[in-house]
Image: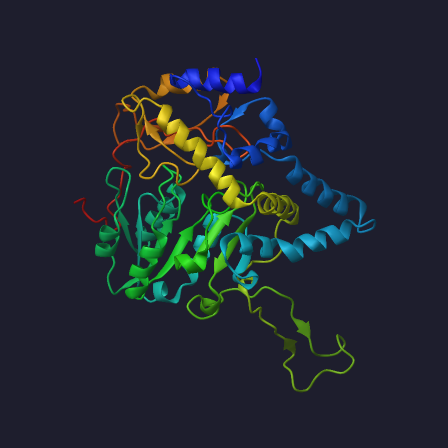
Amino acid sequence: MDRREFVATGVGGALGLRSLDLEGRGASPAQVQVSGVRALFPRLTEETFLNAAGGTPLGSFAEEGIRRYLDYIRMGPAEGRSEYVGQMRAEVRDLFARLIGAKPAEVGLVHCTKAGEQIVLDSLEALRGGGNVVTNDMHFGGSLHNLVGLSARGLDVRIVPAVDFDVSLERMADTMDDRTALVAVASVSNVNGRVEPMAELSHLAHDRGALVYADIIQAAGAVPMDVEDLGIDFAACSAYKWLFGVHGVGFLYVKEDLQGTALPDHLFPGHAVRNYAPWVEEPDPQEEDFLFRPREDATRYQHGHVSYLGYCAAYEGLKFIHERGVETLHAHSVALVERLVEQLDPDRFRCITPDPGATPIVSFEVADPDATIRRLQSAGAVVAVGGYHPASTTRRPTSTASWRRSPTESILTRHAISRSSGPCRRNSFRRPERP
């Protein structure tokens, strides 16, 4: 049995599809263009990988970037080794900026998405002055956990609960007021691939004097985007998902005119120069004892050295995306997601994604999640299991099993096996009532 038959009979059979021709005749031009890259991901020779939104397998191109950095620190700078590292450091921010429609000066380096979000939460002047944060429960669970913790310390946090896995602009607008300083959301939700209407939400927030933060970890590299057109003021993204990098590496976007103003400096990376003997032969009498040159771009928010090894992987991942085009990868993903939705029995798999096919992530509810997980695993599919559990001693079908796949695979989806009506919530923050 070849791989195409394996995917069709194994995964398709596990889900009870009448047919699963996701690689066969009728493939779109986008599918044809990306079909040859599977060999760049060694793990895919062993498994049907369905968890790209949880983290993509390491590609051979990213592995080569890591190897080249290891050669640099192992063997030294000769034979072009330092030139490669220098090129990576000079270009990686530009490559990410181009991907999201930003300027290189608007991009800094952080170790993960939440680290970027925390810089905004810690530094935003309006929040320090008593402003509130508005979000919704389709935001990343780790961010919600952090916000609930911050609310216990006095931050006014307002979390709008979803209705049928979606949140209307009207309910977000009703939750904002003239004290709202920040609207923080996931531009694409990891829960079900829901796309936040960022341009409209940004307009509502800006009209009320608030700024907008977007978690773009499930968007950058997966869907075409332009932060300026979307009205996003701040954004952050780790590299280990759709950027084909590794953990410990990420990017922070801060709109240029907000740097050092609405988002002031709270640390000052760089090196002071001593302006006195014996450090200099002739001190400059017009300068202070320590020459202080603060940075004037988004690198001002970096704490210091970063994982250059990890950024070599991200550098190669970004080049991989730009060479093939995020539009091509997105079109390939959308075609596969739409075909999957068409072939699943809606009575057995209720789709809970508001706009299936808008992103590579699509989610479904099923009556028997454990059995479905077992069938997928027996078919050789790599799945991720997680979800929300109510405060009850009786286990209800509230776990979320997800299966996702990189753009190099034949299926590019996220499959949420089960989902409860919502997570347990504490009363330490303001939660708007459901309509």
